[in-house]
View 1 (cartoon, one colour):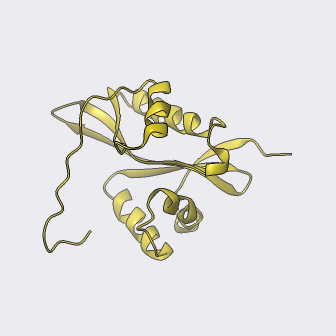
View 2 (spheres, rainbow, N blue to C red):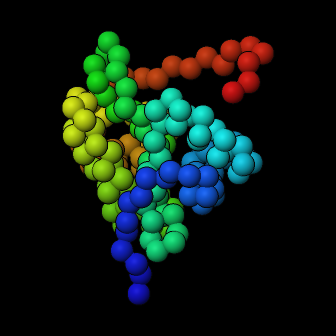
Length: 149
């Protein structure tokens, strides 16, 4: 019998470490678990939050996001990371994560939910449309010389 899905805010290094393998599915350039924990802690000091969808003790989904404000959107939530374990996709986990982030944004009076996805991510784009998000622009990037992330 499978366990119900519970959503938990990731609040310490042990919980964060448990998220590493799944986050690597989305961000394969992350190769060191301890460096990942340190990065999440640095980002948390800048407002980043990580929400885990758990089935029993297993992390089956993650949403990393920030509550922000700018001149384009006013107060908004930006979803940096959204990933569901491949075996759990189409089970509703992604929708639970988006809804939890949306609810937090609404409760804290943020007016928009914003995220980026790759142009070639057709499955992700369909998921976002089903969640009520609409494509509003393109994201442009320049890798700057002699700077490492």
